[in-house]
Amino acid sequence: MVKINGGERNVAGMTVAEYLATTNYDPGRIAVECNGDIVPKAMYGETFLKDGDNVEIVSFVGGG
Image (cartoon, rainbow, N blue to C red; front, top):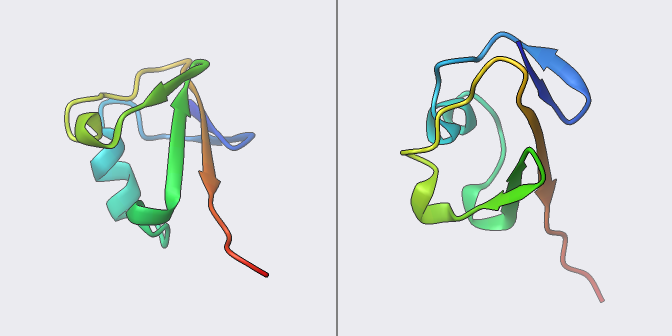
């Protein structure tokens, strides 16, 4: 199980890119942190989620 934004998900073995494809996140407007480290967008397809990982996904919101 992988903890994503505080909730447990059964996504171990998926890449960050594969997980994001199952969500409504706009990849151009988010940042992904895995176990305290920012995952560069270029590495989403190569970064595998493992049991016990703690992932935070933050969406950027514009305003004015």
